[in-house]
Length: 221
Image (cartoon, rainbow, N blue to C red; front, side, top):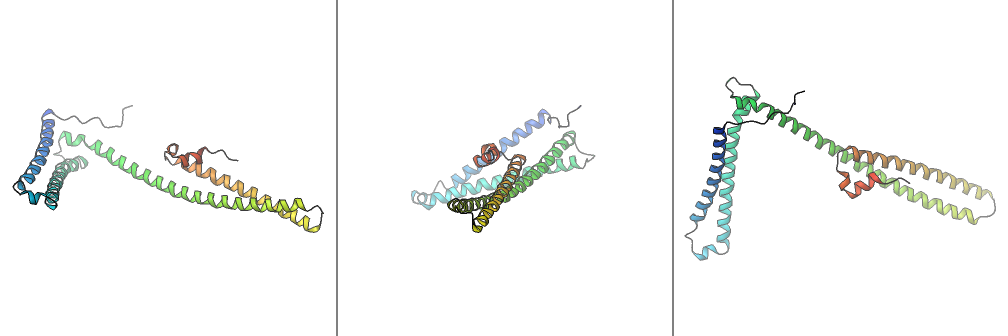
């Protein structure tokens, strides 16, 4: 079965030489802009070079570099726009190289779409994980409260030797609270398992994060 990935774009030697010369031209233009900016202020005396004078020179050099970078970016965009449009629209006057870049453009667009979808999935997983973490905290607090109540009632039940009506009611309360605590613990395990599944299925590198790793690998009680 043939591979669906586009083959490497092979440029004629002449066009590779043109691209190399274009890169050298950009570098020379940048160096020339810096030299012009430095020479424009070389005749200033030492008092102007001190303090704010040097800062002004540096700012002008940065401005010249930024202006050159912006111009080069505009030129590059203009140069690549026409071949891309011809490749996408299958223009009759498109060259072989312009037609050959169509698979690369399609692959780039597909990769961008997949990356956007993955970002959305990660964000949704993070939101769901935050909700589950909140539920875990709330359930843990409730478990602590129930455990404290059970211990308190158990202590009272042990100190009462007489099997009075009050003691029977107390024992019933203990049993009810113990049941509630078991249900709460079971709910906590379900929430904990769901959170672990969300983390492992989201594509997040949980193994490098101690908190997420502990959440996924923690053995339930």
